[in-house]
Image 1 (tube, rainbow, N blue to C red):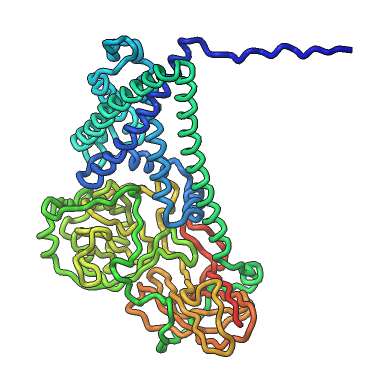
Image 2: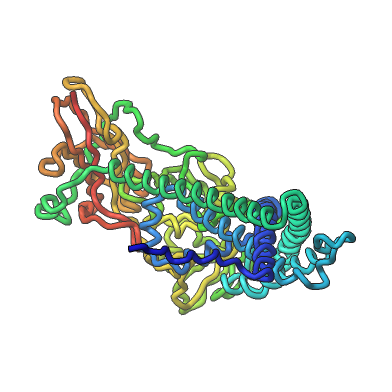
Amino acid sequence: MQTTQPPTQPEQTPPPEAQARQELFANGFLAGLAAGILATGIMLLLNIEFHGVSLPEEMGSWITQLMPAPLFAFLHQLIGDDAKHVLVAIVVVGQCAAFGLAGGLFNQASGHSSIAHPRPDGKSTTMRWSAGLLLALLLWLFSGLLLLPLFGSGLFGANTTSGLSGSMWSMGVVGLVYGLLYVLLRNLFSVREQVAREALGAQAARERSRQTRRDVLRSGGLVLGVGVMGYLAWRFISNGLGSAGTNVAHITQNFKRKIVPPPTPNYGTLQPAQNLSPELTRNDQFYTVSKNLVSDPTVDARGWHMEVKGQVRAPYTLNYDEILQVPTRQQYESLMCISNEVGGPYMGNALWEGFPLSTLLERAGVKEGATKVVLHAADDYSDSIHLSKALEPTTLVAVRMNGQTLPQQHGFPARLLVPGIYGMKHVKWITGIEVVNYDFQGYWQNRGWDDAAPVRMTTRIDTPLTGATLTAGRISYIAGVAFSGNKGISQVDVSLDGGANWQRATLKKPFSQITWVLWELSWTPKAGQYSVVARAIDLEGNVQDPAIASPAPAGSSGYHTISITVR
């Protein structure tokens, strides 16, 4: 029996008008994408050098505000120190893609309008330069009237550090760069396509152009996707290998929250141990964390001033020269970021010089009923502390760090120091001190982080490094730092068997009760595998909490644990 094959359906070809629209969009998208990459670079440069507005910065801040604190902490733990840079990269890529989309839609809409006119030979169309100015104007209005208000930055960025005028001119420059370059590239692509048509024929040229665009987009997307996934996988694996497991159930079963009376500190002399943190952290080694995704503010002391205002009887303003006339004192103090993981790097200790915040408040005269003091910063950051905390003698406005003028990255001209609470409350680049009579919630509190933010006691093992191999029978040192905010450290215990048994470490007498303490345990190991754990006890007898908690929303807890091999 003879069978017949069903007739094959001819390939469906879009009608000529649809093909024309697709080509217009594709050419416009590539021109817009290329122009958008340069325009985005100009935007970031203007933001860093001339304080222009940065849409990636404003959008990134808006994204973090929408992100729940646990998700923020998880991503920060997964990605690590580069979390902000990854977010900036994602936002920048998205902005460039949006520029491409705008270019494609604009080219499609203007294909038969008066802003695109035929060449004299009638074979192709070019776009007038006035079209680029129109596109720049449309994007300028769209960003200023819709995007920036959506991000909470006000009309045309009026609420940003750039201010209304700074945002308007910088967005105008970016728009002009984009619009004019877009027209140039769009016309270049159009002419190139016309030449190809004349050489290959209309259909062949169209197919080659379409295939080229697909190849570019696919290759770029593949490289980006593989890079991102590979990086995240590496972080996930390295995080997993970098910390050893601890028998938390065993430790918590025998956990005693407080020791009465508190232990007497076992002060002594420490032997030099490789990788042990120095007692004082150099300025260039001191951790820096801020909300800013692209760049921190660079404050010019000549135009800077600090207002003391709010619920006070005599508000006033000080400039930098007047700040330097206020009598100062020195204070050793350690800081730790609330986003620091157990065993993490976001801790440091320095010698600060400044004057008590209470000096400024007493001069202003705090009104009855005031409850909080709000600190405003040059980068639009704000946070608050309770009035009682603000009046403590160790709460300082610092102007020097480790004997030097306060560095820009650490808050020049003036920053706050508030012993006992996490670093997000130690506001940098202060521009205003406002006394209020309500429960002010700051930048991070509006994103789900704890407002009280007391430092949770922590111990970090600096040496040996996790995964290290030691020599059996040779004396070794397990050493690190312990910190409890403003409660000091009375004892550090080290376990070599995952928390089953503990040995008391030697402490180096600290500079003050509000600094970290260096500790060390001498050990002559035998061959084997070891799970090393460390814990601390403060001067009040409180024992470090072994329960594992992530940084969000009130700081991390748990015992730092490492795995080592002895041969």
